[in-house]
Length: 147
Image (cartoon, rainbow, N blue to C red; front, side, top):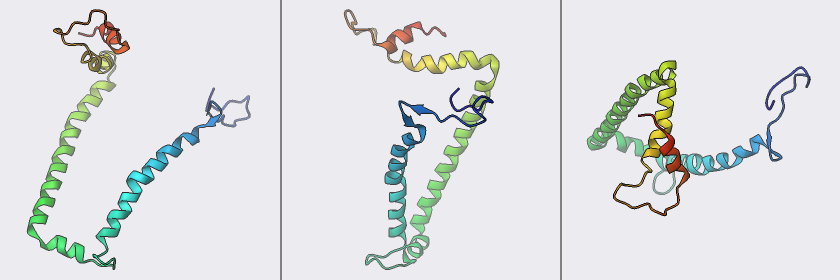
């Protein structure tokens, strides 16, 4: 009955605790890493974008960027690659999501998506595995029969 409201508890939400630690405490490492690897570099880029070599505020960097034809050409290619990648992902993801959501294919597709990566963990046939320990992933892969 974690995180559920019932009439017995007066409609109050139960707080989920894992080994005595509040669930929100697990967000602290994520927040710290986000600040270190996303927010700090973003501010560093903004600083260098709006300052010159001496540290004074300027828009000269943007003026320099937009007057050079080779930089505009590279930026155009970057946007083209981004557009093509986005279109390809959408064209692939929408039918796969639709197939995944259908009830007829749901069970088979789930089994394929779970089992297929484990089949790549089997040793090659030329390698002898006599006496070698059986890893859980190999045992799992041998029991996945979806073909």
